[in-house]
Length: 208
Image 1: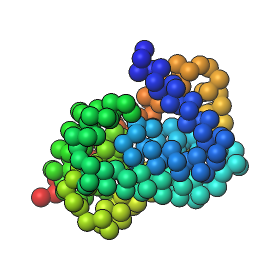
Image 2: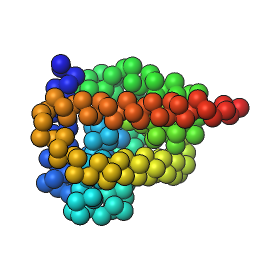
Image 3: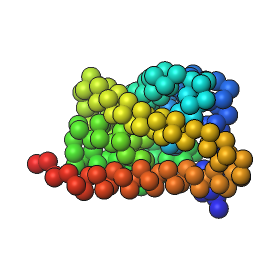
């Protein structure tokens, strides 16, 4: 129940921020999402997509705001990794829900796949939030990091935005039932994305 309450609170916070602040709200939320703060892009971008479908937002500006926010937040995390280090992040990270297990996964992923992990991780839930830290710790080329981060973020944000567009007016129907159902929707979206990408990756031959 605690997890559901957190997800529900995050969902409501995201919706209110975007509703009140528009593109700037999208940008700032996505900065946080990539700067080691677990703000769910799986809510930010689909809800923004819904606002596109209702005529309030422009699809290209939504994707641009989200992707530039990701880049800015990722650069913050990169420099934290490069100049602050993992230890200090773990010491104070609990105050913004950073878990050691999440950092371990991101570091393992980065060590296994190297620089290309920066791009691929942008298409994976959870890992996308934390991979910038090991990239900074490993002193990855800043230019290459920025390009791969932006490219992956554009793909991810475009996909989530179009999911929101497809949901269309159903978002309003979903929102009216209860905060509990909001959390279920977030969980369902995350599970669907994870399942899709695991299935897709399993069908692609491993690159030596």
